[in-house]
Image 1: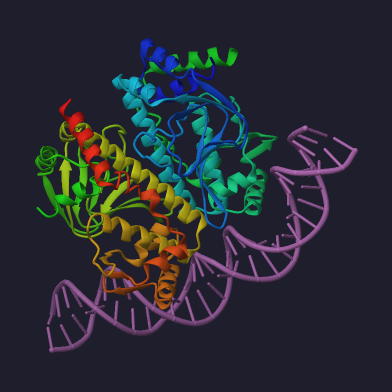
Image 2: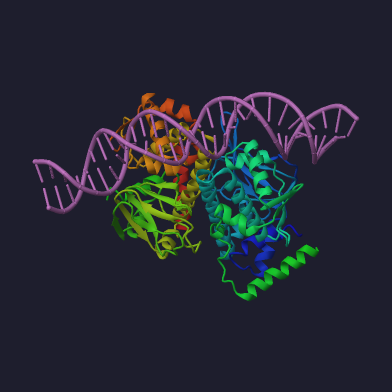
Length: 259
Length: 259
DNA sequence: CGTTATTTTGAGGATCTTCAACCATAGTGG
DNA sequence: CCACTATGGTTGAAGATCCTCAAAATAACG
């Protein structure tokens, strides 16, 4: 119940849904599976039949090279669609796997088709694909042009904002980051050793701190400043920032945290 | 006239268009401009009104960082749409500029809307967006996980195949590459000095040779082998290669467009 | 409580960058 | 016609960043 709302909350950064549209979403996301960590949702070369939507947990999109090294090209967090492209591109050019326990909804071709009959929903799905693309561009900038320490800082800023946008961050900028340093390394084009040392730096400079799998951003301003983070590329401000819209969002967040 | 066909040729890797659909394309790509090199087609922060389609020449998509460094995140070659996202995302999160003289078609919101009334065309535009996304993923892998020399080899393989797919490569694997080494460096997350030395290596190893602005791939097999190039990610083989399969695809497209 | 995964640290080395030239080419204006 | 300038390509030397290798410490897990 709670989980079902993450993607609605995400998409509502872009459009506001009517009650019927929300019900339509609920109806088409009923078929779900519970997956353990490191479970492949779809593999390179597959021609999958379903679209997957992350309801809870973390997953990632990645490619494996001939020499066995891995590059993670996207993190998939609650509210994210994994593979909206499967009805157009017949062959997966990458794999998708869970990083943690995940609750995942499976939507068939007809689920998507029926959802897309509502123009607001079709547009929102377009938006989410385009935002994924924009994130990918920023990751390329990150790996291509920033230092190891800046890269990690930038990724943490992005996750902070993305998770905030679906209500998964505490008031003190604490969020669950169930990702190993090896996985971070595979994300940023670095080695574990580097990642470890750079995280130590960020920590000793007082910008972040880690408590188990929780990450706390101690100084958001300085962290963003340090890596040149500009959240425009997440395109979270498409809707007019009217006070009414904001109030609705706040009320929902309160409801959910009590649930 | 010749130029008009590049994007049709590109999209026809995915669907086959009817004569009416081709005419529709012709009708909606009549408004064109001729641009000089280094001309900004659209800038970061813009809310452009038109979609741009490259008819001839090379352009690129890039971001500038605070320190002035640049990361190119896509090459746009004849047949490529620059900014199909402008009707959804209200603010450009990156800039687009020509690299050479470019002949560019400008399509308005209504041009696109009318084109998308034909399901085959709508699907083809979707396909082209998704392929752009796939290329972006592969570039991230490239910059994140491959050595300087492999990166350049991989980019050259990609351009070879992409330009081949629109008929811009000679029988002897020669094509026009009007890109400076500085631009290559900004593409691969390297410096000009490195790019220069790696190109020298590839040349001395007999894989490529350069004649002015022409690049010749002397040993395609070895070049692809060297960088682990696998063209699957370009998704150029969506149509069934059998003649029968093609007929079915064509029939489907016809049915849908008449619906 | 032993086993495995993950984090942490150090030392040495490779790759790529930075800096600083110099050369080649093409376009410009006297 | 030729000096002058701008752009791009080429090269070498020195240094920084990040990697590799190796090992220990810590945490997670059945």
